[in-house]
Length: 94
Image (cartoon, rainbow, N blue to C red; front, side):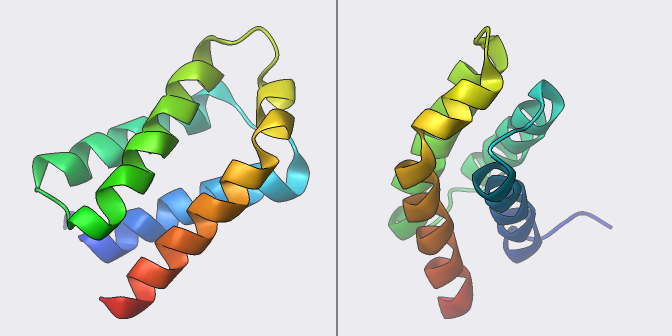
């Protein structure tokens, strides 16, 4: 059974929350978030969440190719808070 939009957003939110709280992550997590976002964008997600997803996608793109992923995560703490909040608000509306 494929994951619906709500479940995909929840997984993205969980991974971003872990990045924020632990200030560390893995390339595999970045790649997983990218795949989830690509899947959501193929389904024409709501405009209210699309920009957030594009920002998170760019964050993960940079994260998987950086020499120091943990520093990348540390530098994006404010963005992570914003993205997590946006996803949470959107998920609670749907």
